[in-house]
Image 1: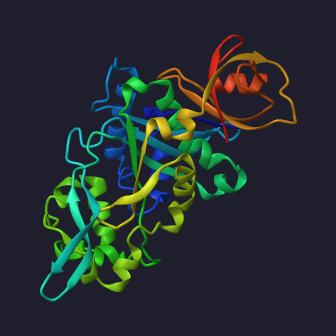
Image 2 (image 1 turned 180 degrees about the vertical axis):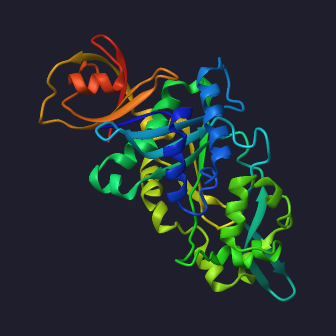
Length: 340
């Protein structure tokens, strides 16, 4: 059985393995012991803090295979993007160039560096081992969407909207057409070198050296234009999940690799809007049900699993003894559910 729970400092060695296997471009999962230690400690402090509004908190979760006692994935939430340092994006815009005398009227696609998404909550650090995703059909759903059940249970800790940066296209050699056309002109380093440096330090110091004036997209190479908004094959599973959740992808892209930056209001996100609370009964669940994400919504004891249940809103939910134990619940406890 897989269970999602808050990361602990004792998880550091296994989290480091996950970070080492994650995609280039997931700078929120640096392959660096000290940065990961800081990340887990900051998360532990956030889970135990008394919070009434979204601030500098960050929450880091791990996906544990209880059968093997090993971590097979991780993901996180930053309560407020740009709280401690600017959060940069490229905004897709259209400029109009017109000449009445020449009877020319052109609409030109441009990219403008902006801070529009500062203050939104930010989904980060998504990774699931390919073997776990292949073995457990709902592993990626659990790893990605359980964060949204946490938001639904503790809305005071998060903004009214959520954003997520999806890793953009790069080839098998780690070359990013968008970086080569834009960022590389300002930094004498490859895309991979830039992303590693950002993971070890911060994206801000590089972002502040990016051009502040609009970039005219038609002046970029064909390869760079084609890569804008494209998703890296290794990030498609999370992208697909979030698109089904109701996120939109048309307005912003990442400033380094051109990957899509998704955005959605919390009240329009499926796992938040459609999730329901139910009282727990412990027994034998029906074998004729459908899979649900089930979460026990405490803070540092937050737990989430996938369970096949025959349940309807307004009724108690019957969990097996093993499922109840994994969630840390008993008869009469409340859980939050949403269909997979």
